[in-house]
Image 1 (cartoon, rainbow, N blue to C red):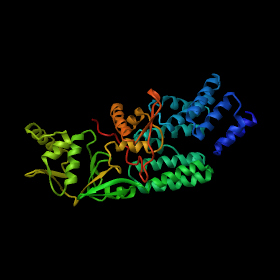
Image 2 (cartoon, rainbow, N blue to C red):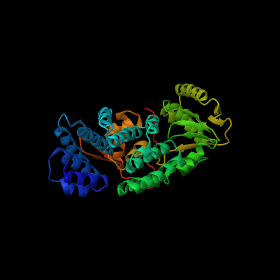
Image 3 (cartoon, rainbow, N blue to C red):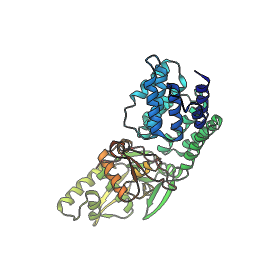
Length: 406
């Protein structure tokens, strides 16, 4: 490898993309194309970066599998940065295996971290956590060590483990300082700042207030009966009953919790759960059936009793019932939460991350667009959606699980 390529590679490794471009900007050989693509990615021109990396991969011959694999890993990183999450990840896995076979352990580890990052973005936290646990951060250089700890913090935050997230971010900050890459340090600082922003709304006794992640963690372990509208479950002191696939039951549970210690009328329950305009005998019968199912689902945590006007919920052990909701009071808050990271998302990537259908997400995006809360870029299959970050809003900390279907 010639001296200019070596110097450009060192500039990229130290976080100096402009320095790298000065050395290879006019060259068209495969190594120069690959370095130019990586530099353009660091500068934010992802479309140009992807085109350059694809040209480089095609230009490498069949005996240059290692170089081609490095291009594929760089292209996969751009896809993740641009929220193109629809691929299966097989090409990235194949590239990682090639890197491992050729002894390029650093880039192989980088590819593994990209695989884990994709799993985190689409909400597959258990798989991501298991894969991360198998990696030794002390065996990689400081930049990858910082990425490792950022992933640890991201998974902990999504699991509402604020203390573990803070400790991981402290380790990430030390690794970023050791690496001397300002962009990496800025990413760690932004993640640490997100932990201090509101992560959820507490609804109790007719009033609301915002909670930070640490307060959410304390609430979920306090013994209070929590109807968690961020994950569509009912929680009490470590016991969690998921209603994510039973949206009608969850709607009833939330309404009853918001009405506690009083009751909720049958008319209101039917209107919200079934969208009934008028409570007739058919809706009364359906409501009785669903209330019976809710009693069975919450057995051990609470009972649902009939009153003269409707129904009420009574905790069996807890002294209080509260509702934990998204920080933004919007029907499409999960979509807004993902878009608020400042990146451009396709509707298919949003559907994958939220665990719902693309059509459901598309309807939500159209509604948000009419309200002026999101903006579309491009047309057809290349269309992406963006939203301005919501001030003081922790974007995706409470979005690890699928949203109930229609």
